[in-house]
Length: 258
Image (cartoon, rainbow, N blue to C red; front, side):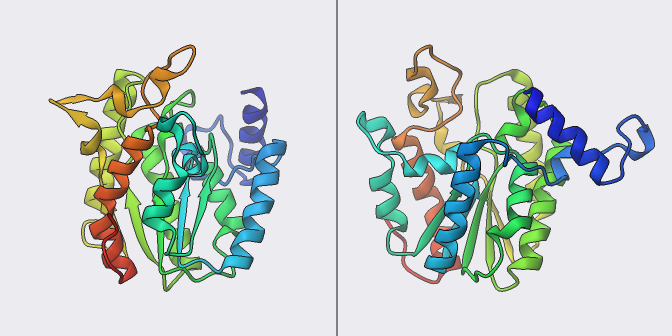
């Protein structure tokens, strides 16, 4: 956390804002913030740059740990994501650009440093914002601005790419996080309701049973020690993929995968 705080201060200095000036408050959710000081993150970033150049993908997924989880393989079966990814996206030349722990700020940095350069995918799927609502406690308005900044960057850098923007998935971390998730998704739905090149889709309903979040669809309660529901299991992610399919197939111009 101290390392992240140093990056925050550095970002504020480089962008010429003063954190102590209320009239010029830095919206950190919309400021590119690198995590290259983390070795695993740097290694993954470099590897994904090479993969993008080699693959010239038709489909890219931008996100955090929920997206990166698609690369996990079991046992146990509830973390065996790779076969589901293969079923839905294996024939679509897709590249997974999910990074554990990333916020809108870190994804923005990645986009501005090569993850949307030299490629021309048909579709980009964006699922980001959950980590804004964790320890950082970034507000709904700040998170929406961060996501909007990401979309504007993708539009500028990938002018022929259609964007499928997913709402932040429901979790059970705190009442504040749940309320803020709803507020963010409501604002995004309104903001992109009439956009030609961005389709907003909230698939959160697939994680709800009898009006309540279904903990059986989340990994976190199964861990030791158990944690509040945040990351979908294989079954949860499969339901999410199926809910996305009509919109995604339409944007890709192919058939619905089941």
